[in-house]
Amino acid sequence: MSEELKYWYLRDHKLFKTLNYFQIKQLCIITGFKNARKGEILYFSDSEVPRIFLLKKGNIKIVEVDNNGNESIKEILRKGDLFGQLSLEREDASVNEYAKALSDEITICSFLLEDFERLIEKNPKLALSYTKFIGFKMKRLKNRYTNLIFKDARTRLSQFLKDWSEKDGVFDGNKVTIENYLTQTDISQIICTTRQTTTQLLNELKENGLIEYTRKEIIITDITKI
Image (cartoon, one colour):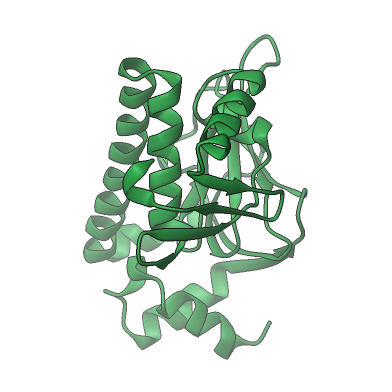
């Protein structure tokens, strides 16, 4: 990848808006870029070389694995999101997660943790921007877990479809079309219920004329009625 393309990839991200031209050019030197395809594993939390990743193109899922080997989707990430060693500390080895590509084409850039730490030490404005970015991300996860605790499965699915519509949907009045890059198993893990329950709830929405569901897309006929 050319240095010029690297520059514009980084310059366009809101995290680096506080950096000037020469600082971003220096950032290009420590940044690695990678392209990936659907199904590829992009990151393991137990990597011996900690990195911070920035998703430039596509969608990925962060999957948590418990001590019994059970998997659950922690988060769906989109263009501009960060993942990896975000705490800037060596995390507890008991935390076990990985990132997997959901889209046909994925582009990520990454920084070695120690390089990113040095960059932040030299740029207080970047440190503040990073803190705000991670704070917002933690708030988003907290809200998700609150919804899981206090809402039933039908309400959780409804809220998930609304959130998905906001982030990825194409609106035509109250009608929304979403490119479907998630399986029903993925959705069931996100809303913390069984696949059978998710299938039943989606079928109910379909029978009531509220959605049209295929492997390629989901059409919500009226978002206000979900």
